[in-house]
Image 1 (cartoon, one colour):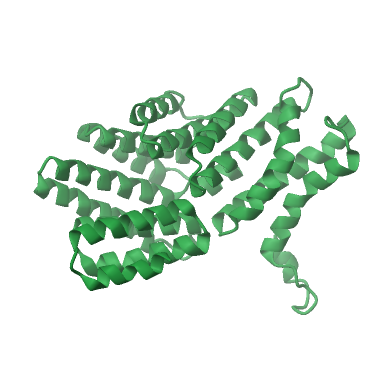
Image 2: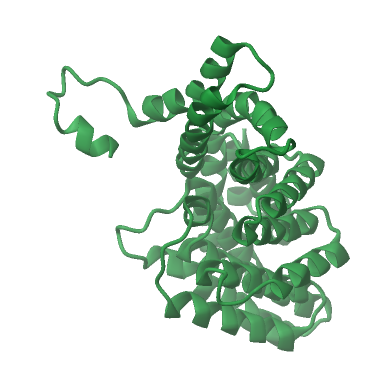
Length: 352
């Protein structure tokens, strides 16, 4: 829509950038509430406020695809707090407010990951599940449960990770969009990989792949923006990487290398997608970091150097503490593998 509108004007008369247009949408709900100056606005105002919040949430998802996390951090809480109050009180607007509140907390959970605020991330997804249930929207609550499972993984709470993915899987049926079923099953495979249950890993990865490739459907905007073929590729690569580490730990290096090669093969699919595929920058950088880790496991210095630099430079551009942490962990591990290699030592400059 932005591109269509911009095309109607001469370049010198239309100076608004896409980012500025999205930021303007984020500013609308707080501005309306400031004008009203009431904690719980009257119905007349709510009928304008709730659509503005819906538009602001969509703007946040578009910004999440790029590099502008700061705008979301600053604007989202300003309208999420009053939105949550509306969701907590019975009214004709409660269900809609709860749905939008669930999305808001879902977004804050994503932002918390990149700031390494892991407790806030867990809390954000828990709120997203809670308000999704209040809104009677199973897609919202199941999607938030899947992300909560990953949040537990980041904190090393592997039992909670598996239990949460199992809870999400319990709600799967044909009313749940295929893309979300694939997300849950891919996460479940990743959870079983932490426990070395290879049969379950391969089963759920296979099911996730078949579901994803077999159906095309319309899905809510937050799900479309949060998960797609790129994230499915990333899940698969990460799971095979985990299996490789598990077998390396047990000294079965032949099987470990097989899984490492499968991880690289999976992650490399991200380079073969159609040019029209939108890859969120945060996922592009995560895949680069994972490919660097896989190259390290395969002792491929050339590939490690290539993907390490992509990950480290991408993390700086994103200003993501999480992606920087991943790149730093890769460099430290590489120093142990190649302690005398000056090329690896020199890569530290990319972390500065």
